[in-house]
Image 1 (cartoon, rainbow, N blue to C red):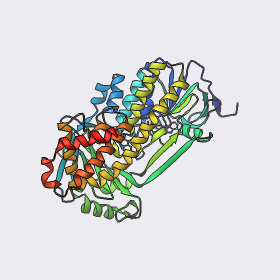
Image 2: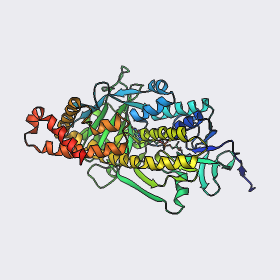
Image 3: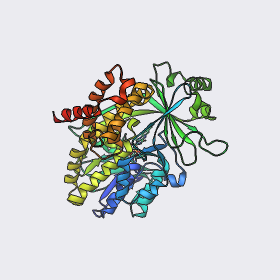
Length: 461
Ligand SMILES: Cc1cc2nc3c(=O)[nH]c(=O)nc-3n(C[C@H](O)[C@H](O)[C@H](O)COP(=O)(O)OP(=O)(O)OC[C@H]3O[C@@H](n4cnc5c(N)ncnc54)[C@H](O)[C@@H]3O)c2cc1C
């Protein structure tokens, strides 16, 4: 043994090692433990229950929707998680003059739920430990030898540790170490793309009276063409805001903001109503990091008894609010396969999982990219709002025949790939409807049955 290297041999009994105790890794560990597996999770960060939550520039609240809830329900966590959430029933769109309009996400009571990433992660880690999962913090995976299933970690106290594990699951995010090991194998497809925009966290505190400064039951958006600001509510009555700007090359971009005066100038000009509620803007802008947004596609996700899941296999841009929900659905689907095939057939379970899941994660990744344009641009367009109104009416008249794309993605568990195909057919029909020059005046008198019949005909082709 080399000096400073501790080698811990994990025996057959301890069969599953999960890399990464983020949202997906900790949820998955609970699922696997419930199936009777011996599960160890290795996380590079320190235990944030002891050292507090450090964000490293990633969004600190998330929108949880139906697919995520379904995965939580299966392991009995609905109530515990619900206690941390705030429902958002629609988008509240802020124009440049401070006027707002409300665009419901779905029918009455349909909502997506704002939740703090840090608190959510802590709750899942806590639950996993209570169920008997072993979690090793401060264990950064440096490499995985896929021929021998040997994993090497850097550990602050001991230097390097090595383990062997029968099954390895990489839920270590967009820059996955397991994926890097797989990339060294032959015929591994990999594509990553950084988009032109980055993001920065900002905040709107509670008012002096300790109240929310804006409507708490909405996701607030300030769409401004090539850039936008959004805000999600927190239980302490503050809002977490995310500013999305191009990195460079535009009139308003991160590269051109050099001091507090620049920031304040932009906010006064484009987001004045938000600016009035942001006393710490100048300071936060220069303290909080500017982070990049990446889309990652790869295949296969599996090499024998090693597999990627969550962002490690399909990191997507955040504009459909589905990355975590999709990763939770991954866990749900994997568990359904284990339920059928048992815990002694990992290669078969993993092979079936990737084959089944890949078309769906490709579909939601594409939709997430397309929704960026909708959020920052189209939501400011009255024609877009009218289009949504017509689609909502179609859905209320023909609830099974016409389901808006957002509803299929967010409020159902229809496979993402089916939602994508159906959404594209509806989009083509709506393009024709919206091309009518009198649509603004006549939208209520349209022949809605005929529109739905067009959809039925398109589906039949
Ligand atoms: C700005 C923004 C907003 C978003 N909003 C939403 C939203 O509203 N709704 C939604 O559903 N999704 C949203 N997402 C996506 C969501 O954050 C991700 O899809 C989700 O966090 C993926 O979880 P994960 O566990 O796969 O990866 P991660 O959350 O990245 O977790 C990976 C874990 O692995 C650990 N790790 C990394 N490398 C190693 C290593 N070498 N060794 C050991 N441990 C390691 C990390 O420390 C981390 O704990 C958003 C993303 C961004 C960037």
